[in-house]
Each structure stands twice: as C-alpha cells, then as structure tokens.
Amino acid sequence: MLHVLTNLNIIVIIIMTAAYFYQLIYTVIGLVYKNKVPMHEDAEPHRFAALICARNESAVISEIIKSLKKQRYPSEFLDIYVLADNCTDNTAKKAERAGAFVYKRWNKQQVGKGYALDYLFKKIDMNRGIKYYDGYFIFDADNIVDENFVAEMNKTYSKGYNVVTSYRNSKNFAYNWITYGYSLWFLHEARFINYPRMVLGNGCAVSGTGFLVSSKIIEENKGWPFHLMTEDIQFSVNCAITGCKIGYCDKAMVYDEQPTTFTQSWTQRMRWAKGFYQVDTKYMAPLSKCALTAKGRKMTCYDILMTVAPIMLFSIFFAVFNIAVAATFVTAPPLIAKIVIDRTMSFVFLTFLSAYIGLLIVGFLTVVSEWDRIHATSVQKLIYLPIFPLFIATYIPIALAALVMKVDWKPIRHFSCSEIQSPINTENQNYSFSNK
Image (cartoon, rainbow, N blue to C red; front, side, top):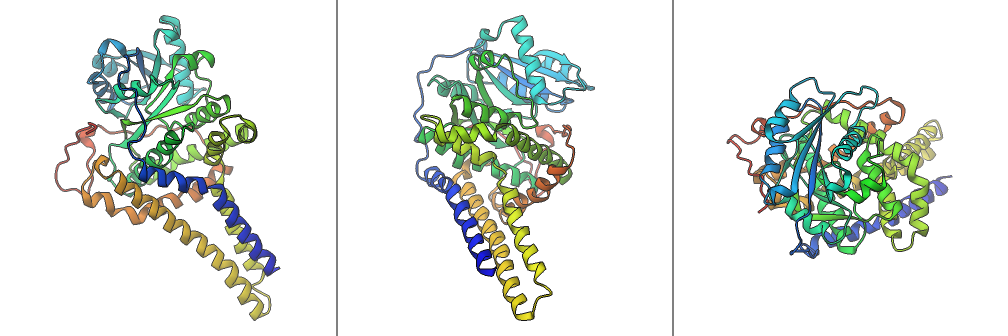
C-alpha cells in the first residue's frame, strides 16, 4: 500500500508539473522579451465610450471621470457613462457634475456588475445605437486611468482586436499585506501571463476592469449576457470558445483600489471563488473540447482551461488524502506507523514548502521586473514579499467555504486617492498616475 501511495503521489506531481509547465515558459518570455509586442503607432482615433457601473461610490466617482477627462486623446472621440446602480447616496449627482452621462437603475433581484452593464448597454443602444461607438471601455468606479490609456488601447484595437485588456496596477499597493498580495498578483498576471500570451499570439484574458470591447461583440451578444459572479472570467472563457482573440496592451495602465481589511478581502474572494465554480460548471466541457479540437486556438483554450480549473481544490484533496492515510495507520504497529506517517506527511510538507518557495520566486521576479511601475518606496516594494505566499494560501479556506456556502454580491467601500496612504510610509505620498 505504501508503494502504491508513493507512486500515486509521484504521478500527481508529474501531471501537475506537465499541466502547468507552459507557465514556466511564459515566465521566461516575460523576463526576456520585454517591449517586444509591435504597436500600431499611426492608428486613427476611434470613437469610444467609457462605462462605469457604480453603487454608492460618491467618494471616488469624480476621480475616475476626471482622469478620463484628462486623456491625451481627442475629447470628441470619448464619452463617459455612469450607471448609478441601486445607489442611496449622491453618486449620480457627482458623476453629472464631473461631466458624465448618467443613468440610474433600481433592481434588487438582479444584482451584480454583469446585470448593470447589460442595462447600460441597452440604454445606450436605445438612445444612440450600439454602433455609434466603435468600442466600449469597462471600468470600476474606484479606478484611476493613466493619461495615455485610451491612446495606447486604441493602437492595439487598431491591430484588429475586438477585445483588449490592459495593465492593472494599484492605487494602494503597499497599504498593508492584503493590498500588497492583491497588487502583486495582478502585476504578475500582466507581466508573466497576458504579456507572454500576446508575444506568442495566444488569446489573453480580461481581469475585472480596464478592458475594451468592440461594438461588434456587444451587438453579436445582444448586450452583455455574462451574469455569473465572475462575469469577466465568464466573458474570457466565452471568447476562447467562440474564437474571439483578446489582445493585451502593456502600455495602457489602469490603477485599481484593493480591499484593505481581511473581512473585505474574504467577502470579495468568496465571490470570486464561487464565480469560478459557476464558470467551471457551465463551461468546463465545451472549453475542454475546444482545447482538443479548435483549429488554430487549441493553446488559447487550454491556457484558459488551466486558468479556471479548480486546481486548488485538487491540491487540497491530495493533501487531505495523505493526511487521512497517515491517520488510519496511527494504531498500526509502531514501525509501520512511523514509515507510513513519515512518508505521507513528508509529501504534504514538501507540497506546501514548494508552493511557498514557488510563489516567493514569482513575487520576487514580479517586483524586480515591474519595479519602476510600482507606486511605493523601495522598502514598501519588498517588506511584504515573504508574506505574499501566505496571502495566496488564504484562498484555501475561501475555496472550501465557497463550495458549500451561499454567496451574495456585497459592496466594498472605496476611498479617495487623498485618503490612501500606507501606514509604513511616514512621509506624505504624492501619487502621480502617469505612465513614464
């Protein structure tokens, strides 16, 4: 039995390594081929609309609109729309004063960003027609947009992409270990996942905010029919299956605000975990088929399949399996019990140790690679690095809880840029959100 268990553990390690080996190649590409994606430098300006769905976001809504108004892009080619979704504050008034077109929505049954976006698209279609704009930017109310964002996204869009995602940076990178963990992972996604995909010609994936969708895609989908708890992941999977290649613009930077308390983080990531399970249930079969049969995009489908696969649950299962085997041998003869327990617990220990070291390396490479794009002091960029793998590890109880608990969409309070200051930095921080 011990021999069988050992071989089973080895087989699991080999399968997991083989399944995700391509991401090691992505890491090498992210390190070596920086600034190697050609751009359409002479792109003609297209007419875009920026869409912001906001629920009680009066503290931040003016800042995202102000940053969009300051774009180095012809103002006549960019309109801004805000949907005040079930708001009980003055978000709508502040958005109007800042210069946005504002709609209001009241719906307590269909709650979530996906439903709100669909409503806003239908309003625009009713008043101007979906094709009045070439494309639509999707933002969150807490975002700040780099002044070159629209111009850079237009260049990638002009290369023929119907969907383009951007570089997701953070407003509060080093506020504490929680914001650090979020921020570092999003930077990792940009540098070592989406950028290598773009270099290799594979389809990318959108991540929450700061992406562009052409009016053609909205028209084909008759609005925004992506209403799962992780509508961005659902949309990315749908694009992979239907053959819509998502592009990535490394020079277009959007700043996102991360939750600052573990309670807020738990709530948000519970929604994400439940949303991933929803996506797996609905799309795992067609996505797997696509990875095997789709001509010219097998790698894109396989990559997205590995991205949404419940790999953490798989890892937890085998760790628990080994612990359970060890527990059954506690009452066995001492020599046999010692051999079995040593072997199984060694596998569990090495699994977690290798995961910690691997995430530490990932975090270090990300910080070093993106050093100049991180808005924090040198100390702040490194101080929470050893805790980064532990932040990722907190997904373990979240993943398990999301399996059995009912999850509802809950708002997270956001703060004005003037309120965001890291407790580590004793000096006043002057955030200049520009891409240098």
